[in-house]
Amino acid sequence: MTNTKNYLLGMDLGTTNIKAIIMDEEGNVAASAQEANALEFPGPDMTEQDPGLWWENAVKILQSVTQQAGPDITARIRGISVSSQTVTMLPLDQEGNILRHAMIWMDNRSANELNYLINAIGFDRYVSIIGAQPDVAFLPNKILWFKKHEPDLFARTHKILQASSYINYKLTGKMTMDMDQAARCQCLDIHTLTWSDEISQVICTDLNQILPRPVPVNEIIGTVTEEAARVTGLLSGIPVAAGASDAMASMYATGLSQLGEAGESSGTTSLVFVGAQKASAPDLPIVTKPCSISGIPYIFDAPINTSGASLKWFLDTLGQPETDYARKHHINVYEYLNQRAAEAPAGSNGLLYFPYLLGERAPLWNSHARGMFIGLSLYTGREDIIRSVMEGTAFALRHVMTSIQEAGAGARCLRITGGGAKSKVWSQIKASMLRMPVYLLDEKSGDVPFGDTLIAGNAVGVFPNLTDAIQKIIKVKEMIQPEEEWANVYDKLYPYYVGMYQDLDGSLRRLKETMEHIP
Image (cartoon, rainbow, N blue to C red):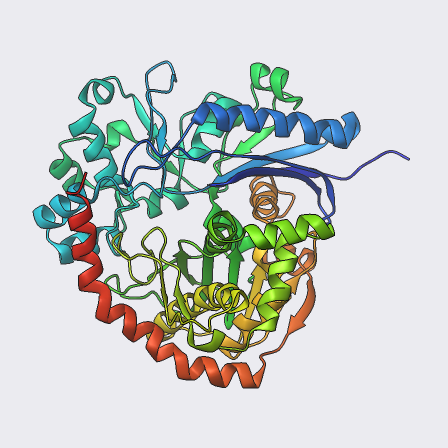
């Protein structure tokens, strides 16, 4: 029988992995592949990645999925969309050569440049331009650092791209930036949706020259070139959409389709989404952005820095016994962590974990916060520590959801996708922490590349109505209800979680400043 289905390719270039899927128009995944990315730490507060490795991994993945799918399906790929971690500072020269490794969102080296920007523009004015809380993760301060510290490379810079923009460039030969990442990078004037002249003046750099013109997420920016087709296994001529941040792709993948729902893409970081009827004020800890899903005019979009990364940190530094046990008994180490966490009571016997291993974005927006265990005693067991890590990230989620509620929006359920959704214990902790049911999505839904395929399908007309496509394709696999006894414990402990950090904020700021002057 002749295959008449349409297929779409979605790819996400995350911090730790790059993944891709080929999906048909009914939501069935025909092929998938992933490769690990590598982080580099060239100095204090510096985090970089090699864009050459990004493309090398992308080529491997595209070769894999096209071979898995076979020539018939590959020939029926109607569109491609790529998302990525954000914000990235990747400079290219006129010929498209990489000038330096990419400074990614985790890079905190430009804190002094951020302070200079805030003082030069004024905090309130800066917030009114960018529509969000200034933070070292974003682009203006990184550009200023690059200009000050690497002037020779800066002088050769033709364009600064985002991570997904670089993959799109290698696929199409076009240097672009999607409007979603443009709105997140804190260089855009949210009132005019153009690069800010005021920020340009302060950093003495014409943003209109060094950054590509922002284009809509679902705009076709070009097609797969003959050269890209030769190395990837794709067919030349496939349309490529501008794409989006992993945050927006995750939002689509969670299946949000109406007000009153919240979504969490739970991976290395967590991305939290809550729909809103009205736009928020720009000076709040978490602010709205316009949303393209019918029935959700605005979306609160809040990133939490180290959720899954906290569990990985535990395994890498303290978790050798758990790793050895899992290997000996041939079980997944994360499943064993779930078992150990279930052995501890709610509240982890008074141990609170603060998941600020890389500072924190929403709702703190600072780079000086640090991870902490408070409440350790001689009676603290390993199961208490493991559960407290899960609970600490859930407290951070509650902090975000409370901030969104105070800003005028709310939710009655949470849809969880990503690796964190595989943990029943963690999901039940979150349900109890928020006092709302948690919906876990079926295996074919929820991952970021799934959202990318929805964007690609919308761009090429396979999914002319995204709301209809989301409701049709994305299904709930399981609903987890709050545990009342746990919820009561978390209600009592949450004020301590917030209050303890507030009491320590000034000391943590001074500690970071002190450590910067210690060799």
